[in-house]
Length: 212
Image (tube, rainbow, N blue to C red; front, side):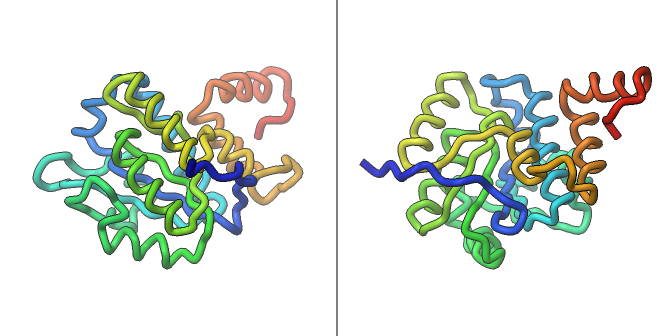
């Protein structure tokens, strides 16, 4: 069996983020999750990466001919970055994507995308074979059915990938609310994209408590 030992936590100085195929045509086929929840969760990943200066690779498939441009909720976070457009389902087969990942110099890759059973699973398997540790925020991924997503996650775990959530990624980067240089940024992300943000705003407005 190819299963590896469970890997440790990600950290701001030893990981890179890859976001794959967040495009209109890919969202159209998603039925495993509420699509708006995926949009919120992938923004948590992207904004966390930007806050902690995590190298980030963004990639699209057939943007001009079929799938459309990367959603603005992501492209607006990385306005100076052109997505790596591919023809391959498996991003690892694209030389530009592979080179971009390798050029980060990071051993741990956090990877999310649409759909889980293909555009997430295929490059994950290849990256693990190449010696990378891969973490998959499954709540920022989606597939054509719940079963497709769940079977894909099971296969990902079997080959050694580590499932996580988008907020877990943010929290593992922050580690300590006493880190003042990123505290406000974390709270802004949570207020904008998580249900907890409702409570944070209430505490700040009415009780004067912590919350940024």
